[in-house]
Image 1 (cartoon, rainbow, N blue to C red):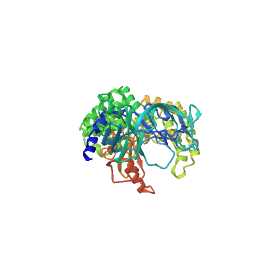
Image 2: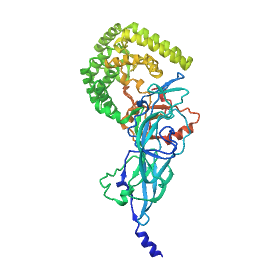
Image 3: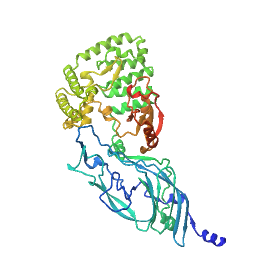
Image 4: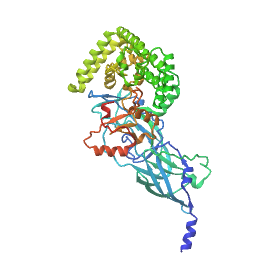
Length: 568
């Protein structure tokens, strides 16, 4: 009996992990919409209880389909969508196929990251994620992508092409497939290497498909019946089984990369970015040269770049160049006590300091004499009007804040049309405690509130700001108005830097920027990247800590001082 059983077993065909890898198909193609979650956001109008594999690679992102959001409560509101492709890792430990009954028995382990989908404002209880496994034949079809429940419609108005939208508003239609009846099915928890076991009849058209947020699909029919079919397929050895971003802050990552390639023209920020990258690498001599070229190309520079250029010249021991840059700073009206900073001690001891300081003081006073004092005063008045409502001690209701911003924005628009943008040449640069240069003046908060509140006249303001940006009067590209944390992969919590697992592999350049903020002894003003500071005073601190362990990867400790964001 044992001999007979052994002879029967020897006729089974055995397949390995390599065989499956050779027959992997539709790589990074299909997302998985199970019978309960029809798309990323909510159930659809389709009442059938069928799971679909959907080719949604052409998904644009909600706002890019023309969906608009407007608050009904006058509270600050911005809709930001983030979507990532999260991979599965399939390990085949056993696969045998019996030619007599065409039954394949497959066992192994599956693991993967389950961070997926868009950021939405509907708070729901997080359900346990599963991997669903199918063995059978596919049927091609199409699948509708609905808008879904993205926000609370009691507080936010949602429209598509100026018409009211709801969760069943159609955004797009995608190619898809599902499995014929009589397929084999297995379901296991998604997480760290959970076992699976599936068995079923196999023919030439059979597929083995694993579905969670994204899928892994194997042409098992070809593996068994037609070994030449997928012979040319390249086996992909994926190093990272987390996620890669597809949409970040409403922008398709593919489009962002395409824009980077298209926008290769050299401009003002090409040189400043190069210089700041050299500063991050402590290559001050090379950074100095970038700033020197910048000064040759552009007659008027922002004070922050002159501020950096002087430091680079000093640190590369080119004191003549440092004095030359200092003369440019005088044109901004910055007074001589600015040079009381420790880094300028070497200049103050230099033989040229006396003549430099006399000339500097004269040029600085002459620059101040040319300031537009009326523009400066009217900006101060607008700032006082804004802060009378926004001040922490007497902050008004959201409705009052919105109305105030709309009124102040209107006055700011009129002022800009009359006097032009309040550039550093017109009203000077902001310096506090004599020596600390602030890149953006106090009135910048008026622009920030207009961005947050989006009043009806914000379009007119944006047009004026765009014009001032082209003229290098408003430093819009590096304004913190454009880097307020939305869409960031990075979080700072309890002095530690984390990256979201849903963002996939860490961007080393961005990490260096953030880390430099906490190790910048020479007072450079650079782009510190986009990140969010997480408050550490939660009522349920343990819950937040656990959430960070689950959703984020620890990159490094930045500081032991948890109150660092009060000082930077």
